[in-house]
Length: 416
Image (cartoon, rainbow, N blue to C red; front, side, top):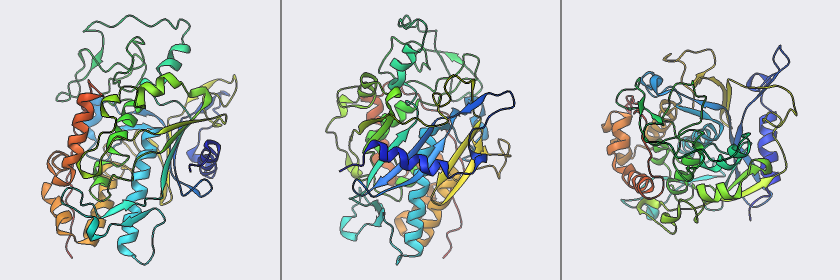
């Protein structure tokens, strides 16, 4: 039995409220208030045993022109939902590291898989425990398809815009990061008549172009590939890593939009009952609502003047950070010391530590890939994940355009 939505929300809000004020929106000198979306991941064993293990706040993403600076250290997307999921992955691999270094100290949520559970196609050494449910709270509707009706209602004229011509939408050639090429597809907030489609992150018309996909699209993909990232999928089976519930404020919930974006009767219909090798399957999540509103949401300050906060907070039970523009506050893009604990390189570093401790030959072989791009494209342990992603994009999330690849050297010293 799942916890009530209000219980999940309160668990996340209590965790956020305990953060220091420097990680929260503030009141500015001109009297305006900053606002920010909040998302959190809660794990439960039954309706009354809950723990928030990851939260994130934020509403921005990295322009495609800046991707070349990343080298695994700059977050591409710091919308709250994505930060919460990345923080959850950090939590999981830290649990794996703790189990590896101190096996006598068991985790409440993660366990080692027995030899009899392992197979050639499903060989990860860890799994989330079977009696653990995963819940997510978002203070705002996920951007993209799940929020289109809300976006339309917020317009003075909610009449759907005309279907765009083939030259009216901007996307970016991944092989030429600084270029913006007019092509059809990947709309942001506009073109309301196009529903059920893959969208990029919404932004102001004068904002630099991005190919970062909307939170709705990324959550839809997660119904098939689980909440695990590529790096985490090297260590943890995806089978028990699917979202059970998503809680939204009632003011941010459109049954029509959410059913279309995530549900088995919507765009994911071609994948219902689908199962793949490696522990992958399509698993829809239940959407619940709450009357509670986050203090720093767009609705939390009445009619006061609101300004979007440029700060993002990241928290897990293992650490917390403040981010600006996808890097640690006070650091510049490209600074070798600016990487967050949840950036690609930061997560991979902990994965590498676990591999070094375990000493499993199959895992140690991962390092022969040499680079992160090669790991994602060629590593045998991720073969089934790649197959699932390809089929989902082909059958349900059509028009998905991949971002520029962010590469870095994944090799570390594995000497015993």
